[in-house]
Image (cartoon, rainbow, N blue to C red; front, side, top):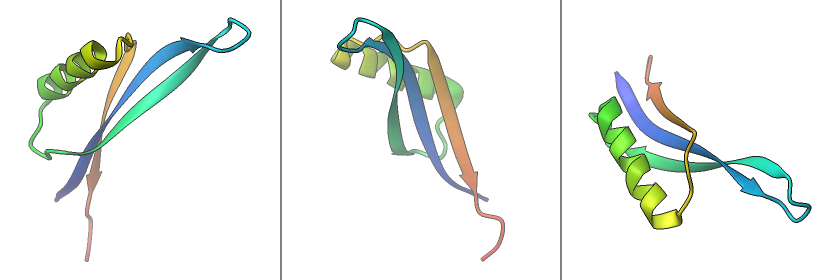
Length: 67
């Protein structure tokens, strides 16, 4: 049984020394019925809102095995 879904968006940011470092934005409690295209669409919305460029988008699904 699929218990919960979340998304992670990875991007690069310059630190105070001018070096790139990888950062991550995590979105919890995404609809469990969301397909890959819905996660990609969500990443596009966040890119537009934050002016970040996501080079990697992950969909994480957590399953409940037993209660």
